[in-house]
Amino acid sequence: MNKESKIFVAGHRGLVGSAILKNLQDKGYTNFVFRTHTELDLTDQQAVNAFFEAEKPEYVFLSAAHVGGIMANSRYRADFIYINLMIQNNVIHASYKNGVKKLLFLGSTCIYPCEAPQPMPEDCLLTSPLEYTNEPYAIAKIAGIKMCESYNLQYGTNYIAVMPTNLYGPNDNFNLETSHVLPAMIRKIHLGKCLFERNFDFIRKDLDFRPVETISGSASENEIIAVLDKYGIREGEVELWGTGKPLREFLWSEEMADASVYIMEHIDFADVRQKEGEVRNTHINIGTGIELSIKDVATLIKEKIGYKGDLKFNSSKPDGTLRKLTDVTKLHSLGWHHSVEINEGVERLYKWYLENL
Ligand SMILES: NC(=O)C1=CN([C@@H]2O[C@H](COP(=O)(O)OP(=O)(O)OC[C@H]3O[C@@H](n4cnc5c(N)ncnc54)[C@H](OP(=O)(O)O)[C@@H]3O)[C@@H](O)[C@H]2O)C=CC1
Ligand SMILES: C[C@H]1O[C@H](OP(=O)(O)OP(=O)(O)OC[C@H]2O[C@@H](n3cnc4c(=O)[nH]c(N)nc43)[C@H](O)[C@@H]2O)[C@@H](O)[C@@H](O)C1=O
Image 1: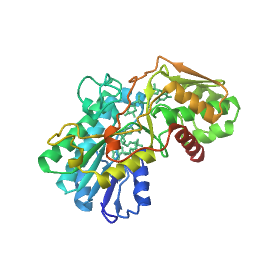
Image 2: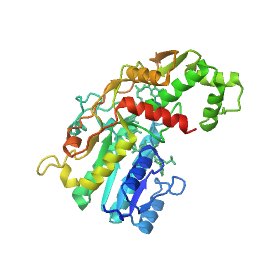
Image 3: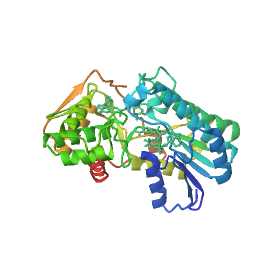
Image 4: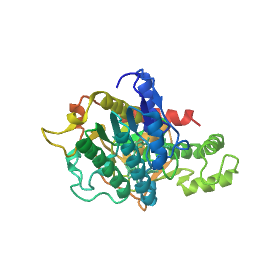
């Protein structure tokens, strides 16, 4: 990739896509093409083909997808499999038809079996059943890996699939139902603190910016209290999901973007074949290799926010997989390593949340 290469960042307003775009701009890349979801629905094959034929991008970051936390994945199963398969099939095939030089496909570490060895090496793909809560999403992502691998083998393309661990950062989704755990906990615990302190000014501002159900900042205090209660945010207590026992690993989204750009710049398909002639499991895990329990994350967030009430875990809500620690040996051997630790990342995300209402 050179600084004038034409680059398509699909999903450039999302958590990872926005960070990829910023990383590329900071590195001096200048020639971008992007479309919002409304301008180009990537599930629409004809529209995607017309876009590629007109724009002829040389490099593609495929960071558009239908994404959500554990509840969204387990409830909207059809959307997660259909939309993701459509987006990736359309973009990968159009990239091949239009001579894209290199493409980066973003999968997820939820592609690995529920009972995978820990940490999970790339090689444990398809060795036993998946975790049920996010099986449809994982199957779409596995199809994406195999699509990249198959096009590379049959057509000689240069498509790389990367499998990020749980991500968090600027432009994260803070929706109380559909988000991932870190933004959800930050918002819930901060709102819990505001309720504890009767700071309805902040709660109103937050609800105006990110309405919950049909309620906005103009609602009465009692209406606000009733809605927050449904999401487990009560005076003196914030309720979180599951048992708090599952272990998770978290990577700052801007570091994910940095790893993505690094791989686009330095790594080719030929480099990720594990040994001479080996073509299986050519994808790359992206993570920190460090895990902590959900309860410990919640306690860390509580301390950073300075919340004095209680945290309670509701075990009727799903835990999901109990462990999914990435084996980052391959990533390290390719020359990339993370640097933002969870302690700093939580402070950054909390600051971002407060400043972006
Ligand atoms: N967040 C995480 O913890 C993890 C994410 N990943 C993967 O990383 C990638 C990026 O995820 P993330 O940035 O978090 O997701 P976001 O939801 O933040 O962003 C996804 C982007 O894709 C766009 N998009 C969704 N559907 C369509 C569509 N039909 N047509 C056009 N654009 C569409 C969205 O646009 P709009 O908002 O307008 O709908 C949005 O810009 C995904 O492949 C995801 O699976 C992997 C592991 C963990
Ligand atoms: C990135 C990854 O993300 C998804 O998997 P997940 O890691 O299970 O997702 P999560 O971030 O939503 O939850 C992590 C853990 O945290 C617990 N938890 C507590 N309290 C809240 C809470 O308030 N909200 C949420 N969301 N979780 C909570 C929750 O019960 C779970 O034990 C995949 O579906 C798939 O999308 C994927 O690839």
